[in-house]
Image (cartoon, rainbow, N blue to C red; front, side):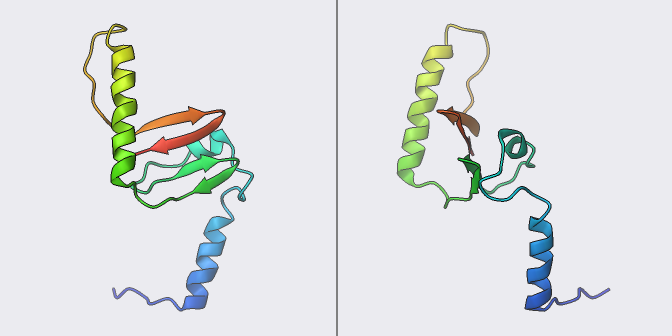
Length: 100
């Protein structure tokens, strides 16, 4: 079966209907944010808003590696196991970020 091409108007209406299933900007809660499915998109929550920033720069990766190193030094004496650099969630002053 051939895939139907949607007009721009129909696409816009479908996107609008989909967006209505989610909270409005400035109304997102921590619970709403953590209920989002995992994705390969960078999605952050700040002051009740979802933000989809551009992919990280080299400098961001350097900062991330520094945070990982500091956390690894703290955790090295805490429990047995392995350290693996993966995406993580960071809370700064009750503002949450999901880092991929």
